[in-house]
Length: 288
Image 1: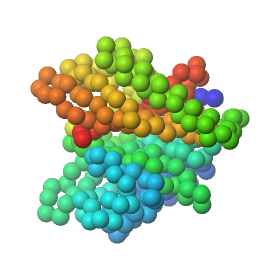
Image 2: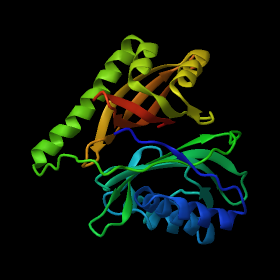
Image 3: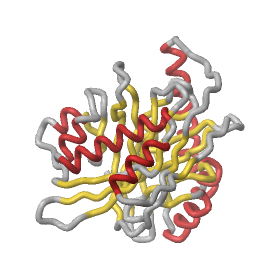
Image 4: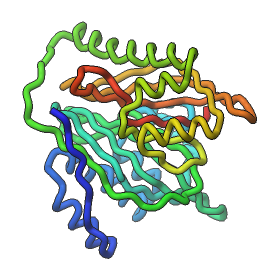
């Protein structure tokens, strides 16, 4: 079943806004948005270090920008901002309630330095106690000139899904997503425009360094053409919701522009569409 995005309508004082929006949220996706907002509040009231520690465990990965074990990184004098705030403007959870995604704008600052802006993307999973924990998290810097956008969230329906028990079968299901990314990467080598036209969802959200959030396939294609950017990618990581309708891939990329060649990492969020084809609904490119 196709999920329908919903927009928040509250535009009042911050404290009242948070309470009202949360009260309007459906239960399932609302639990993830609340977890993300709670961590953001800890960052504001205490510090970013405590905030990140509250949402990671031994299986969490942070891209800083290379992937590192989150707990090891945070427990060893990490190079993170002294001040950091963020607010999700996109969220989804799977029907199995074990997997979700949030993303949104952020601000961060070192003491004595200028305030900087960016976008974050977090893939979440639930631990054995039912708590949302970071699976992977990445950030990309921009100029912060984009206007504030409404929260879009996708509440899962109650439709049936196949409950696999075999670890072999679950791994095979992830391999299907990897194969989609590999095919995307192969087509990119031949023709960027054809690849993005085929694999991006019409409502894709695209994050690229020093650019505001780009929404919609047509706008992504126009951006790449304007900047004369050619991208090649190589997948290295994959994860899929137990219910099967969402997944992520991650990997390395080479970005050629009219000025230079730059090495990147990327994260792609995939959705299995009604035509049973995998399409990218979100992509973040960030330098490595």
